[in-house]
Length: 473
Image 1 (cartoon, rainbow, N blue to C red):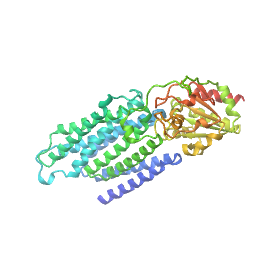
Image 2: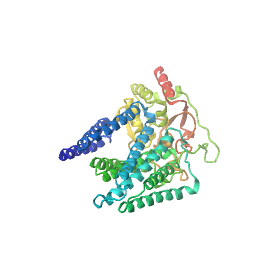
Image 3: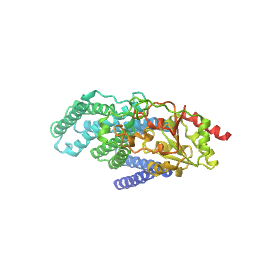
Image 4: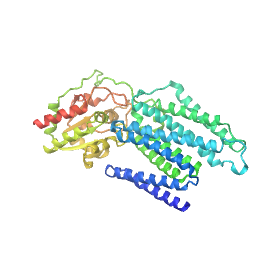
């Protein structure tokens, strides 16, 4: 039986890794997800086989039923615009689960007093359990704040307590570590009262809240990825404490991939991870556009008819999707408009910034949902060189990722961040509801450029209006 369990675990791990490889491209992402899900099913079956006491099966099956009942409906019916919130929520559940597992392990071992000598918990069990408790609790409560900010239950602006923010965070972290050390010392003696474990979880939980509250909306995609990596590492630690190979390997895969993704996203925003964790960036108020003489500039408004004429007689149009397209669910309207343009001989491409939207791959998934060709979706590094020879760049609800201040204004908070070179196109049409700023809370000089015109309104309605005008040409 032990050999069978180990074989099934190895098969499951191989499917995890193979499935993860599939997530590297939109064409193979669905299949990769299905392979990884099948691998998890095999791991669950192996775990069932490894359980000697069949009385525990009832509890486990009950947990599976509850989990399926709570997990499947939101996964099936949540709109793509709310997918970042769902990811944050699911990640938080994972971190909270690990924290509860650590608590249960404490009650099973360290929390009892007067151990027989041969039953005292080993150092690796205690250390792994404490690590899982602290990181799992931070991940759970941090994910709750991320969910609340993304769902707009809390303001996207940084919420801080001023200069006391970082000292308080350090104090909370030191307190959690100190309580964990007390538990570790007591584990080899007469046991530790349960309130020490509760103190660890509470201090770590408050730390999770205090770390994410000061982080603005501009950095929230990176925060979600970072919390996901933390959840994976805490799960791996819990696996060490429980001697569960499946948790160790799965947790390390999630932790490693989340860490790599976090690093890549931070580089795409020209932000260091410590700077993101320090918070205080994003969600501010907009400022009026200004020219070199300091006088306010006015954006030029356009109409659907004028936009349609410009694109109909263009050789190449590059569509730049952003969160505004996601909110309006305009991807199908965009696909219909692009089909009309292509029928008129216009080449249409899509420029995808790594952090456009509120999570990695947000725009790719939306466009794929509308059956936009994968070959037409171009990553930033591949498309930036083409803006200079593009007749029209159509920006749909993107803001910070098209801001030329990132290249030109050394005083800008996003200076040095790689952006799409939209301003180099011969003509730029920006679809926005208003002149409000994006997640970074700063103004975008692109909107006031001589080659830029603004088409105000809901993105879906605006694109549909342009489509109707194209039909009439």
